[in-house]
Amino acid sequence: MDEAVREVMPLVLVMIRSTPQQLHSIEWAVAELNSETGKIQLHGKEAIWAPEANVEGAMTDIEAFDTGLPDEPTVEPRKQDETPPDA
Amino acid sequence: MREDTPGLFNLSGSKQAPERGSGRFEPARLTQARVHASVSKADLASSVGVSAAAIGQYEAGVNSPRPDVLERLAKTLEVYPAFFGVGRPLARIDTMHAHFRSLRSTRVSDRQRALATAALVWELTFTLERHVKLPEGDLPTLETGTTPVKAATLLRQHWGLPDGPVKHLIATAESRGVVVAVRPLGEIDAVDAFSVVIVDRPIVITTPRRSENVFRHRFSIAHELGHLLLHADSGVQGVAVEKEADEFAAAFLTPSAAMDAALPQRLDLAALDRLGRTWGVSSASLVRRMVERGRTTDSSARRAYQRLTVLDDPAADPTSAYRGEVPTLLTKAAALAAQHGADMTVLAETLKISPRRIRDLLGEIDQRPALRLVSSE
Image 1: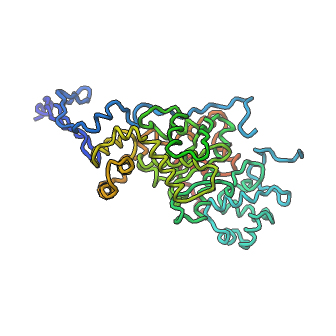
Image 2: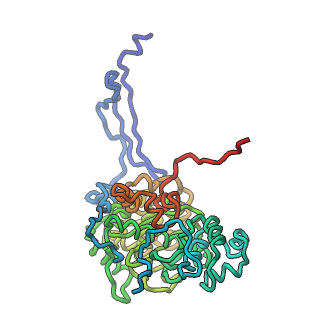
Image 3: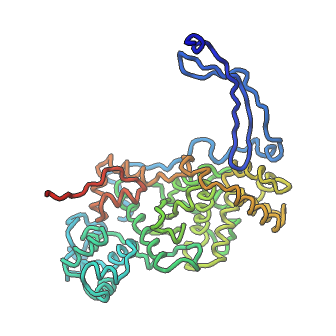
């Protein structure tokens, strides 16, 4: 029994991405747990469902509003001899 | 200039009460603290043991409170006694132009309380600027009569934004000097969101009700940017002004030319959801855009809104999951100021309010345990 547990047992993993409004994609792959590293390796990953291209055609080249790093505000220490804004 | 004229920032005697009878009591400070605490004159009078008329006289500058009354006022309103003194820059709430949505349901006292919050946010910003350099407010000046759509185009040009979705809207606005603060429900609950310009500093204040969902949050902030550009100097309020700010937000986030190419030919909610996730707007706002661009009818849109209401999950797409949509300017400035000697205590001394209030204004959650005096018996 103990030996059976230690044997490699491939698992079919089905990955579904969705939002409350809609299904985005379904993919599957054979998942294998590497007992030494504790990481899961995926083999033969394939998409088994994807939305039909309609508006996506017009959006393929467009980067979404949340891609990339934000252009965050820059703050710098004020130098001793610098005049603050109220003066 | 008289030698005893206080400077713009008088750091001395920080927690001491202002002198009575020497003209150092600032009546507008009492109004600011009372309105911010949402306390009526009658209730405040009752708490400190004077008549309601006396509070009115203090606020009108007819009389100044005695030192013992001043101490009680400070305790009741949770400020230091020196808060009521002159010598610090003061954003007077009676001179601000702000635009509030749902005017009919917004009481004057709620609007005043919201403005008192904005005044405190500005005073904190101004104090931080003594120690750190923040980006200067960078909004284009528009000619009178500029349409909301033209204003949206001009802002995109002025900020150098490329065609396509406006990425990381709040970070983008903050890096152009717009201060954004999310205040807790209850403090400015009745007014939802509003914007003001105080001494060239554009400030947008919003609440979790507008800001929990990232798409509503972005539209709300864009709406306020519209007010700042189109109506900052105008005291005009009303439905027409709010509609203009909505038009601005729609044109800024989803420009017509791009929408003409991207909107589906028929009302397809799944397609609109995908499009909205690219442009950072809600499906409902895209349904409105489809009506505006002649892609669907008002009656079809109404059915779509009903369907979207059923599907709506308030917990979906929280703003907190989007780094570029969460305000960071004031917290970054406070952290840098602390590294250069102006920590929370120094800021509190300058503003004459407690460090806890400063943390609260910065949006920080106080995680320290609450300590209480217990009986020695």
